[in-house]
Image (cartoon, rainbow, N blue to C red; front, side):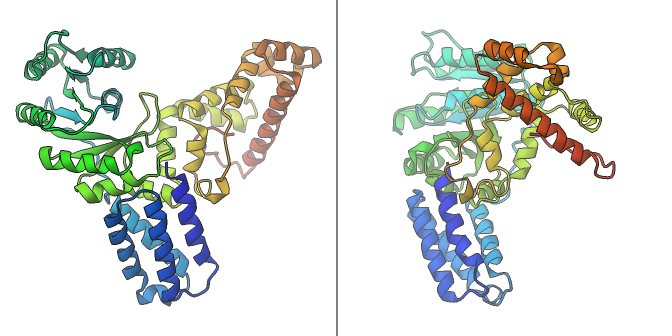
Length: 442
């Protein structure tokens, strides 16, 4: 989402790095360019005004103009103010009580029902047993959609029949189902509308009084820009939301909603939807997002993704095989699958410091290569995977036919595999030190 803004800010701040000293004129010019970049990213103009004013006030201080590293100091100030703009310190999503309610609200089409399922996956990973409660009695097939999603993630769903229109009765049914199924948290998927109206808000206010939710989360589509901020403001005034969920944060919107919503509503961004899969949900960390926007990467999120997808025992065995030079194409295939499970490779690379800067402009990862590599390895016999050196010309032709590729693609894979083994052999000679692999070794 922030790729354009990242490139612009990187270009602006890079100009300062070549200067030994920075004058007040330089700071004022930088502030003007930052203001322009933020406005072009569709950030609320009042938010931009306050943000740039704080940066100017801090940067005009004596510690900047007389510093030996003024550029780094200004980047530090921008990072800190950007973190504050996004909500400051991250707040963990912790539930208390025996059976807390999480009420999900938002306009129709914002992604509420999908988020409800994603939240179910999130809570399951935290050791809870959630129940999805279908309360959308207006949108056709809304309850059926939630039921299908519930089956996909193995989370029970409480729903009434098509004739039941009383949301209060449906909620009471949910409470009963939760007791019978011994569920310890209820995710309430409420109805949305095409726009904010009094009937909608009145119904949600009544449900809030009955359910007394511990968390009331507003789901907004970050692709809608400033309209998302306006919607958030109305919901905050009428319902007192506890947090905002930004969906489609992996899209190509300019990012104005994410950078404006906290300042305008005083409500924290709690989660970010970062993909279409039901596991593609991240707790929102303002400092990490600020780092991504400024091209500093996000190693903490990368490590967490790796830990979720790589078993510690398997990683230990992999390290041993690499040290002993017994790493095979079967191991290579398993690592390939783990990397794919971490999400789009392009998004993973952007978390590495340096990769998210302007140097990545135009850089595209063709993930079809993953499919090709898998097909080639799957077309090999077990003996060939364990001992690639036996793969002669006739075997290469057979593997190419079986994988739907060509001999050149098979040759390329075998060459890359051998080069990777040589590289790992060199690392293994580093005084016998144990290698630490945070994620796949290629």
